Image (cartoon, rainbow, N blue to C red; front, side, top):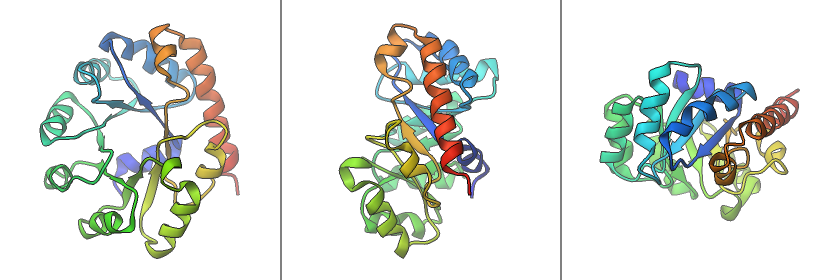
Length: 213
């Protein structure tokens, strides 16, 4: 497994961030780090994503930063150039996956059915995003699919909350969970950094307790 994904596994939770103002990424990253989370996915759903990644990398703090909602190879190229360390896509787009593989760049493509897992395995991938998690069958579907594909790890995203995080993260085929519950749009817009830190602490505590033998 790629060393970036191994680091993400240690944290167990990936905040999925949508930014309108790229300047928010610095205090936001500090709030996440204060809460014990050292990884974040900035989605390319807004024009601020590229600048936000650049700003975060320029201060060289401890955050592992990824680019999410990558829908085109142009998005991927811009994300990599900005300093992203991994890429996440909502679906399995062969062009994007192959673009990243050819550059030896970590990618977790979105999947929701077995045939997409087989496409990932055929390309040598061992980490996929399960999206949208709750709407696609949740943890029972991950368990059912993983029985046939033992070498794959999942990042369930979509409908993950503090209420169901424990059940997901306690399954040994879940690398980490992606979620927005600690970085909601309203919290970022209102600059509720202390609240984000507290929600992050609670998420990390759930992960740590749920993973105990």
